[in-house]
Length: 262
Image (cartoon, rainbow, N blue to C red; front, side, top):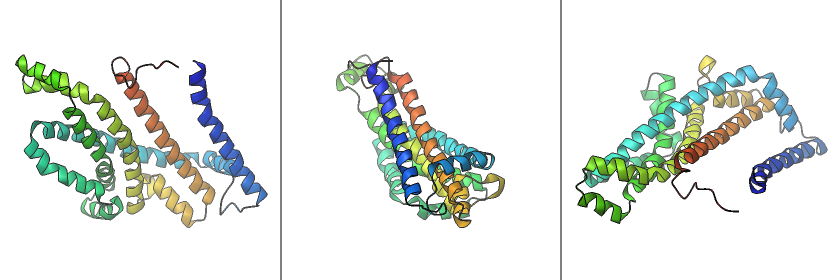
């Protein structure tokens, strides 16, 4: 690993450590009670102590997030391909996708939860609604952003629509798709958490949002912080996984992922 890569890896870690130490110092020096702001070390101790409870809830949230993201990717990509094939279909359906995106999830989540009998399915629908638009918007732009010269070349050689789509439009759209996927992954997690807050499902099917709600009601603030940290770490891991997937898919041919000279 080069010196530049070491700096890129070490810099955010150093900032994180400095933030934790500052947080701990402020709590200790100001004698802040744990039920207002716990020290980071108490939060970590609570995380380990309540790991069985919190890890089970994390698994539920991850299942909802993963299912919603998979549906958003498949449905969003399919709609984007459909939009590129017909301007009429795009003009007919895209405004409704925009409406879903600009409508606050907290406003429509209660309706979805009321209309859908199965709580897990309702949560997945809510998270899908929150995450599908970036896939549709970015992939549609990518499918349309092809080199006009290459498009004319395909037409000159009599390529069919399917051949043009598979061999020109989809490869050209890949960077746009992965950019949308980065955003969609974060929104799927946010949508899952927001839907859990609205649904308030407990018991064995409770996600991390429910644990945050219960910890707040019980004034168990260290557990609340522990659950919040788990959600944050999950978002970071999702972003890193999508980034790694993007690099694997594009590093051999697209300039955005080619190695840069220092």
